[in-house]
Image (cartoon, rainbow, N blue to C red; front, side):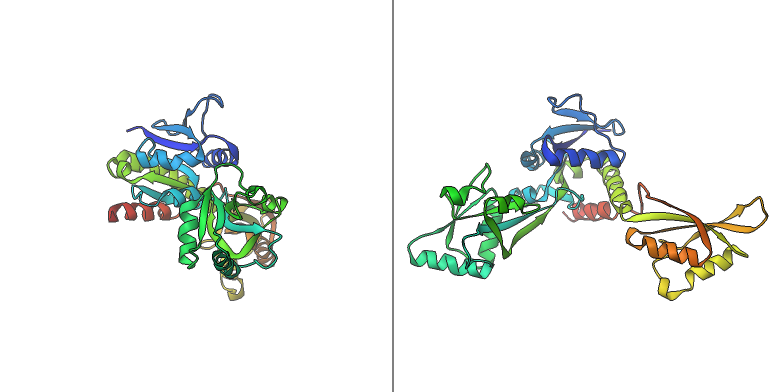
Length: 337
């Protein structure tokens, strides 16, 4: 098969979470040492891993140095304008969650909403000043403010830590990503109501042209996507097995299925019931159901009411559907282009 190149974050929390996810999906990454920027996934010998800065991964995929990449959705949205060759294959990998927000100094007691900010920009204009916003995301910040009909501002592009910009005097406020808000509070900044520009997390992207031109690259992409999708889906489910005494499998199945108030507690398609060959000759059956994690205790009580005992609970590694919804959506997008 043709070699396919996957760009992954080379450092920081995003690197660790990405490697953990791939490992949990059976796609463990081998990297000889932290100073080497090429690795591999032994279970996919046709794939080469390239370690890059998360901020550079979009560019590597867009220019064709990598076929696939995992980076933050915020990076994709900021860099993606005018670059139609990059396609978002899966925008929710379940980690690296953050929000791009507008934040102002806590001392601005009269500015707590986007409406207040709009009025402030007009006040600045009347005084011959321009509101200065420090950000690493000029494209998204500018476009979002324009959509809100806020036009009297200037952007100060900053690459380092920008939380200090207002206190140091080279900006009045900031537009930056935050996951908990702690850093903002420690620097005496506050988010404003209605000032969330984007909700982001790690995502999988690909070079549309390279993937369209090679069936083997599409097949490798499908393998990766299928495993990730099935693993993420499995995290929301649990499998419960109980021993239930009854006259027949049909009797137990009818009891479990026919109580309308207990819908959602009988498994994805219904319970699996198998005869248990007991030494004492009693009629016992093993009943297995797969339910959402939040339904654990109601499902346990439902099985108890059916006579269930000796219940065990397991977490599945994967839950596969009849097809990969994410891959089908991605493939339809490629065909449409």
